[in-house]
Each structure stands twice: as C-alpha cells, then as structure tokens.
Length: 586
Image (cartoon, rainbow, N blue to C red; front, side, top):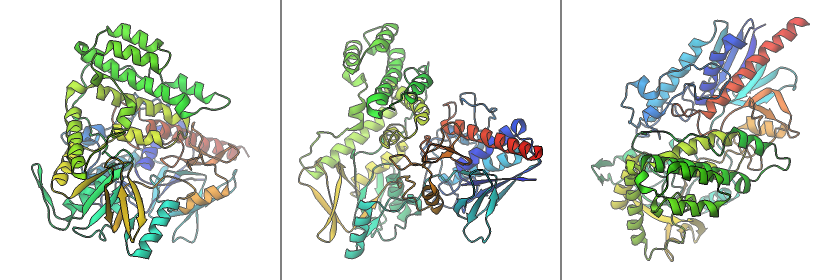
C-alpha cells in the first residue's frame, strides 16, 4: 500500500519542494507510507548548478545575508511557515560576503538533509543518481519513470519535474555558426552553463569574441584569468601569460548593473501599489487576453516609479519640490505617461533624480565613439560611475526600484509566459554582479585582456574567421578564430536535450509561443494542448511559464518560488491522501 512519488531534479527547486512536503505532511498526509524518489545524476541539494565539485573561484551572485531557503510570513501560502537560517547565519559569515558556490552547495545539502529529517516517520526518501529518460502511463493511472541505465522503470502515483536550467539543441543561427567553425577549424562554444564548458581550446594571447555581458560572461572572465594563474594586486591585474584576449559585446553593450552596496534604512515603499493581485486577476480575466507592452508594462512602469519616488521623497526630501502626500495623490491619478512626466518634472527639479527606465535599458542608444580606444575609456568611466552610484546611499531610490522589481516579479509569475524581455531586464537591473567583479573588469581592461565591442554587437562568419562589429564604434571590426556565446541556453521544451521533456511535448504537453512548458499556475500541473491539467504530472522551474526569479531568495521578499512549492506540495499530498481514501472505499 506504500505510495510512490517521483521528483525529477534534486537541486534547490527539488530541495525546496521537499521542505514544503515535510512542512505540510503532518496536516495533509494520512497514508500508510510514502516513498519519495529523487532522480538526479548530481548530488541532492546543490544539484548541477550548485554542486560542490566546481571551481572555488566562482562566486554566488548574492551576499550571504540575502540567501535563504526558508519561508517567512511574507510568503503568501496556505502551508505553515518553517523558518530557518540564511546562508550567512548557517555558515557564520559576515552577511555582506559574496560566498563561493561551493559553500552554497554545502548549505543546500544541509537544507536537503534537514528536510528529509523533518518528514514523518512513514515517509522515506531514495536518491537515484541517474538521468530520467521519459515518463509514460495513463492519465488516470500510475505513471512510470524510465531511468538511464536501469532496465525497469520507477512506478509513480505522481511525478514532479524540478529540472532547473536545461541544455538545449542549437537554434538555426547557432547551428550555422557551429558548421562554419567545423569547416574552417575555428572554435565555437554555444550557450552553456559556463562551469561545464571546455575552455581549453581558447588559446593564450589569441582574440576571443564573446557575445553576452551578463553573469555567464563574469564566470567566463574569471575562469580564463584567475583560473589560468593570473592574480589581482589591488586595482592591477598581473597576467600569467596564459590568458586569451576577450572582446565582449551584447545587445546593450554594457555589463549588468552592480549589486547595491549599502543597507536599507527608513520606511519601505508599500508594495504592491499599482500592480498587485487585483490587477493581475483583471488581466487574466480579459476574454481576449492581454499584451505585455500595451497592458502590463504601463503597470510595471507605474509600480517601479512609485517605489523610486517614495524613496526619493521620504529619504531625500530636499531634492523634491512638493510634499509626498500631494505627489502621491497626483501620481496615482495621472492618466498616462505624458501626465506622469509633467508631474515628475514639476516635483523633481534635477533630471538625474527622475526614473527613466528606457534610458536605463538602452544606455548606449545613439552614443557613438570616434575610435575603439575612445570607447574603452568611455565604458570604463561608465562602469566606474555605476560602481560609485550603487555604493552611495545618496542614490537610495535605486534600492527602492530594486524592491519594486522584486514585487513586480512576484506578481508577473502569475501571468504565465510574458516573453523573455522582462526576465533579461530584471536580471540587468536587479541581479548584476558583485561590485568586486566589476572592479576586476576594469583591471582586465586596463591590462588589455578585456576589450569592449559595443551595443548591438553583430557577429558574422566569413573569410575563414568570425568578425564582430557594433554601431557604437562606426567602422571598427575585430576578427577572431574563436566565438563564445556567454549565456544560458533558452529554456525551450521543443529544443531541450532532455529527452523527458521532448517526449512530453510529443505526447501532447502544451508549450507557449516562446517554447516554455505550460502548467496550471494554481499548482504546477502540466497542461495539454486542450488546456487540461494532467492529474498526475507537475512541473516547476525556469522552463515553465510560471518561472520565478530563483529557487532561493532574499529573506522577507515574498519568495514566489516558495509560494509555488507550497501550492504544489499541498496539491500532491491532498491527491495522495484522496486517492488512498478512494482505494479503501472500493
């Protein structure tokens, strides 16, 4: 009579789900016994991305005090709150430290072991260090999960997919570049998790084109410099002689904004204000659906502006020309962007204190440099300015916007697939590198090992080489025999290398226009193309249309992933208890 639950993916999302199963089981599970099977070739807790077997040079992108795997009373969920230590409390670290990923892997392993220990005595966890190949079985009956290297499947009353970031087959452009590289003896590294990439083919002293200026680039930069024996002495980089020369560009042409380097003081903006549950419900209720740019983005702009100006007026009133109560009333009543801009111009004298999201998203639009060397100096100045601003409390409205971004993300996950642009914008503003990493970029730039290409970087494959250009520096181009795509693969179901997801798609699982797996936002059940939720299959994570900002979060920020984990855990336990009752009634 023991029931069987299979969870495919034992990284932080699977671990967080296990914690919620342990928290909710005393209330909801009344069965005689449950076997939970965790399927993952990597160790439980950290999984692939946060495994302890990776370079100690790779840091987390968050300060230790901003990382927790535990719920608190800000998480809107039905299950019980079970608080636990943040990373810095658990590791007894200075909270402002940016830990290495190995330490985070140990923390996640501890969270996993605690969750297992908190399960009722009649629930047992089994880890299977294999890849899951496919799931089959009737909609109304037991499922089977087939594992690599195992002749017999795991039987499952329910299956939950917590797969995390996926490897992907190459798209048309990447396939053409890969073929060209093979034909001409070039090096082409497609989108990948950088810690898993084989970088040995990137030769010392040779130019390497890098497309992507976000967090994957930071990892690449570290592994090809310090990882090859170089070292920093203050603001100076001492090369080992084994480094290539990196030519980096992207759509924006600039790195992600630095992490903010000061603490919050005073009143927080009361969020959500203009984009909350009521507005989300209204958008979802529209018979004709909604368009992100037309219907959602104005609410996002309004919310982020409110967070920015709340902080400016309450913490820096000397830089405003109106009482906050008057501004707030007029801001709420403003009927459109023109009216809002006029209000802000009257109430905020210095244009530098006004929030311009378009300018933030396109910092090099229309900017032209006479030479490549001039641009190197210009972008170093840009990075220096960003570091100064993000570490100066005089610019604390930036921290208000950061809190607004977290609030907005927590609401937008309820809308399903809203396209990829928002996730990139959020990461660019709210999830950039630690300040010391940008200081390292500056040192590498001064050493001549890091060269900036510009915005709108275009890569062509011709004349036996790769060539990069950018309108930021008209007439400049650089040639190289190596090209690295510094970004994670797009999380599309159709092109996933994971055979399990491809099989689900072939069997009828629905996908969004951007290729994400469609799931029921209420509990994560996988939807078919008719919109029907599968009674026995669930999915959580970045490859679904309810992807959250991360599987862990900073304390007291609502934790959208925690909310989703709780809803799925409760649905699973209720199903198992209900199916047992039906079985006994027969």
